[in-house]
Length: 122
Image (cartoon, rainbow, N blue to C red; front, side):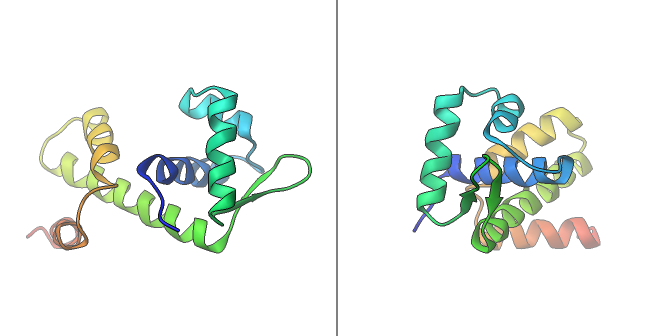
């Protein structure tokens, strides 16, 4: 099943929260991204239906292997693009915001070239 940009953003948010918290719940996502509980619940339902996550009986959100892999890929893009923009002299706040916009749409070819640039400086 394909996933939309918003789904990727939710998975990335869950990944980041899972690094900060012992367990991730819908309310944690609401607080992190500022969306309403019904919006988050709907998105989580779609991600669950797509096989990207599971929700246990007490509301803990657990990413499946597929969900973890996709979230890790998107988050790695986010970090690398942010670093790239900062190397160009862009402020951290703007670099992070721009990376968030681009991470979902950039081609693998362009991203690979940026990775090489960031790693080797050319």
